[in-house]
Length: 250
Image (cartoon, rainbow, N blue to C red; front, side, top):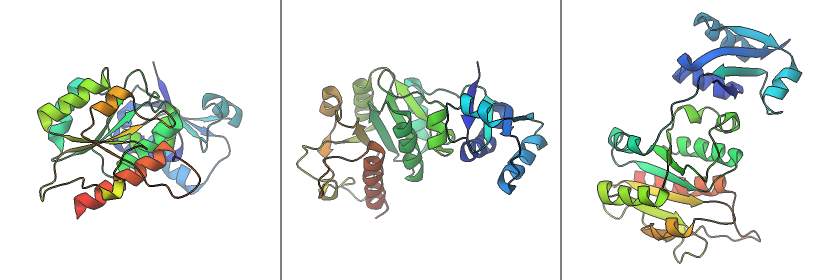
């Protein structure tokens, strides 16, 4: 069973990291800009079939997504699960992990993946039953980041958090509007030697589930000065991750 990937960034990332997954590529009839020509040339050099399609067909295949005139049919991506976490923890010393509890909108998940990649997050953990699938929309919004950062689906999020704490001494910080300390009053790295850190972001409106919140070592809030009470989850994720990056690099 094949999947679809569309958009220039997503297909460029796929070509750079996992060209073996590409089955065939479709480009819109009549488009001849330089960037597309270069990409098609790279695909043809690898012996990958490139076919021409009309806009209506591409619009239907992407459900009117912003495909930029290019779509690829690909083999399903490798899925990451609980048993992959030990290897992921070993790949990078003192990793920063992003845990997303209940992000069910593909656009939000894609934006979080893109932000996490930009901030140097080692991997992302999501629950199997309360998360958007890694579909073509996620890959398009992530602008190629979905090919570079592992997204681990776990059956029991609270149990996984407990395992990270007990076996890997990961310090887990959750975000909650009612938290007494703000993001900027918190020392994420309390010693001169950085430790492994996980940031937990909950769904918009609902926030983290009770069990998820109970398994956090610390809760922080983002100070809000305007009339809005909360931020989009991907924006909030960016605010928190880059404060963690700032403190880690300091």
